[in-house]
Image (cartoon, rainbow, N blue to C red; front, side, top):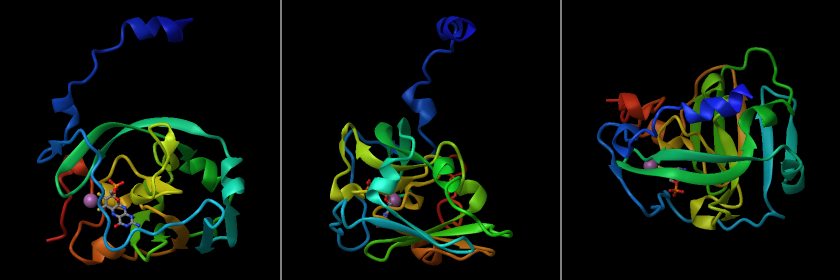
Length: 200
Ligand SMILES: Nc1nc2c(c(=O)[nH]1)N[C@H]1C(S)=C(S)[C@@H](COP(=O)(O)O)O[C@H]1N2
Ligand SMILES: [Mo]
């Protein structure tokens, strides 16, 4: 069992310092960062609609729960300079979801629309990654409203403003459009290790 044997030889756990991007400070709590009011959406009310350059489709809560579920432990970095290490979630990997829908040829970008009106954008490539997921459970409990319950997106490799809470619609595009913070001075991509914070 080569797989097992390798466990004994793995490198030491990276220190917290090495896992903290430049200009970030660690927090033990889990701050809430929301622009505007917190929406209150039940699992029964929640739906996720796909539109734009895709065969239009709407998923209900039970449609979503029937997709493969995984557990994730990720570090979460907010551009306002707090980072929280080892956040534990349960949810659905983005590629599992993408395999359920039919994109039209030429899709290059994606726009996320949330209950409450927030938007944020990604390229299709930055979105359709194995490490991105839709999350409904946080540290073993149903995702609280203030953290985006019942369902949010988590994009661990980019600043947390890309991790859309209360996800409601995903729009597929053949050109770049900018979301709320991206129109208001944040960087288009937002990679924490490169400190892609602002667009000026
Ligand atoms: N719908 C929505 N999603 C959002 C936001 C928001 O205001 N509305 N804020 C973003 C920002 S700036 C951050 S840092 C994270 C914070 O997630 P948290 O409140 O669970 O810590 O959510 C992101 N997703
Ligand atoms: Mo943020």
